[in-house]
Length: 233
Image 1 (cartoon, rainbow, N blue to C red):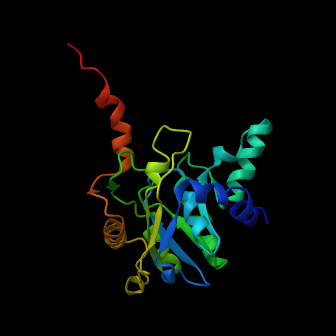
Image 2: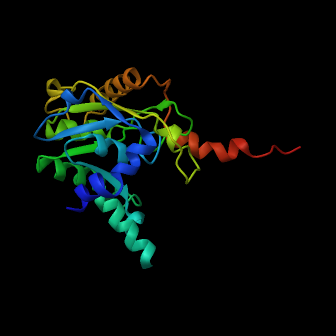
């Protein structure tokens, strides 16, 4: 109930005024049954605008810290992220990736739509970065179609480091479903999983118009503070 209240009454109207969103390719979104939505990731609000424009509920994975706060602020955060379809996952420790995969598979088995960001984190500079293979692994294990989704304009509304949104023009582009049934039974083959991931990233590049960079976004973020540090004389 809270999800639909949030979408149509509480935050939905505000998001529509701020982003003036439109959606293209809605016919590519299945009316029923499970599917993986593979999206580029430019801003925090990606996880709000994609569900806003979808007639079906979409679930996302979110870091557990969003759900463990205390006091009034913590209670509001838990309500907010739960209302927008976020599922808490523990991203620390050696089993973090497996926990995320289990959570995603569980929702797909229930016939739901699962949204994932193959880049693994938000783009640090607006370009499209190399995808991680976890999504491909889920697709192979579950046999569900993968639907590429390009978010356009969300970075303009919610630039990195800002807390106050700006008015922008947001477009959600839904591509044609990708069928990887030809690779059935090949889950765990890292070459196949890489090939599938690269095919997904190519579609995202084509849909979004972003420049593609063949490195992981996280590695650039990790290196940035060091690169920006003053050099010793």
